[in-house]
Length: 387
Image (tube, rainbow, N blue to C red):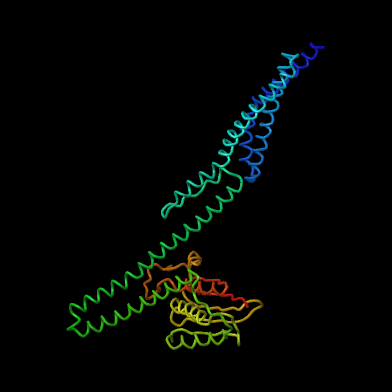
């Protein structure tokens, strides 16, 4: 009977040893497969951590109870007549196995968590390296969980910031360039006045007229820049109330006829078209479009102003028979300081801010604008206001 139990315990011991060897041999493979698995597929961080600690808990259970059970089997087969002594030794060695398994548990858990959370450390280092001249993007290839979503969102934010910074730099550069010319002219005429203007009435009159004109140009430019700045900061004051858009169109046509008699201005205006908006801003919008049409339409050409209502929209249109705009320039018309013809000066091409201001006025009224143009046939700006 004793030999039978010895053989049974030896067989069980052999099976346990075999299973232990198999488990130890496959542990590294399982560990590597686990890391590849959680990185290849998109799981939440909480799922990964819970799954990780579940596996470690199973390992803790195996190391503590199976190893201690193996100790009992070994001593029972070796000393079959000292069962009580074996139990006493088991109760003494169980805490030792438990401590060892806890140490292994925390070491492995710390290592695995370090692997899982290493993208956070890399993201932190990348964010710390960001400054005004370098907007480094975060690596999105390492993670497949919420960290990747965070990195993608952060990179999109950096793209918007970079675009905004570039626009601001270009805006400051263009504004400086526009201000440099009138300042240089004012400085030149001031020096000429100082040298010869005191005794020469002709130079004095020419200098005063030029200084007055350049000062007016600078004032106009600064007012436009201030308008765009307020619009960018969302501090532009907009006083919306219902007003008669038809009456406003007739008013602008009348005022334009006082200063221009070289073009035919044709009204196609429906009666009593009411619009909810800022009357002053809409008038400025219409003036910008009409002035733009007059500027690029040859003498004798026709400007058509249309105002009507269709279904859910109020239509405001300014159409000319001018020189037209090449297709490649239409998408850039509303960019600040943009000129279709770079050779135009401020007298023929303006500052390049008029259409930018028009677009801001359209935006604050939740409207849409469409531009169609053909070379040597004309251009039409078509605005759709919500009814």
